[in-house]
Image (cartoon, rainbow, N blue to C red; front, top):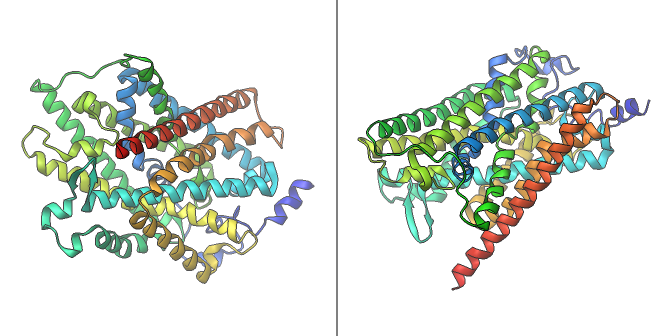
Length: 454
């Protein structure tokens, strides 16, 4: 009886998706929409997973060595599948329609609010970083006193419209604003398919260049195990855990995608297909990037494509990689923005009608969020440092701590021994990786400030 009353209390809150399920009372508002397809859901789920993290994985594999690194990528996918499976099973038992509704069922209003806050912080930080990277790709950036030109600057020279602010403003108005104005996540299926295709283009180019250079003998086969020369190099291995643990974070979009499906029972297969595809992309990217650049693989492998690759048409291939990645992030942006808007609206208006049926609220929240992201990326240089701390903790909480906590709480008595064992493993990994990430970030910021002061 308590569960039913709790469900009624939050009936009009954001456990109802941005657009309610097609069998809801609001059917008439979705004329012409009969539900999302399997392929469209796979594209949207895959795009949620493969964001900027793909560029950090090769450096993680460099630290761990090829064999342990690739094994960790596979284990990360398996752990993510377990956490999502728990979310879906416990959601069905709690008869809720969103992640926040599930956590609210287990831990009440405070738990629900904390989850929504974590999703907002994680997604907001992610989108600010995406916009910074898009600006770096198009307009260029300074790194350690060296100017790295952007593709637009290289092609057209220094003009007012190739300046960082102008390019980001044009990108926001002409590309991002139309895409974030859709009220259904399924409306993004075609841009998500293109985003997935661009990720495959990056893998294909990297593989092609690496195989070409391996055949002509200009690269050696990569190191199979980690290189441990001192205690510092041993502890540095642990800094890879946050990268690997957060590489598959997509939990905030599980329910919005599932709620729009023609057949919601397909969701388990959609998750498995998406994780299999994304882990394959991650393995191929990490393997061929490490093969190509070896111990010179940078923390962001995209920066390795800012120089001569030592093959014919090197400059042309560099540009294709950078442009395709910039466009890829533009197309990932609206998918991440979707759940950001949904959860922020849930925090601010927990008892209002679904945001999709209130145009004024929909466009006000959308404009406010987009304005904050744009200003943060352009005018607050230190915002990256702030999101390094909050992002690592919030992402890990959304992906592992909350699912594990729901399973251990086991309000409906459906948790198996395996669920509880996996939950404790997830909590251990989450806490240790958060600690490693925060310690590493503090150390790097302090070291950078010391170098700047000397």
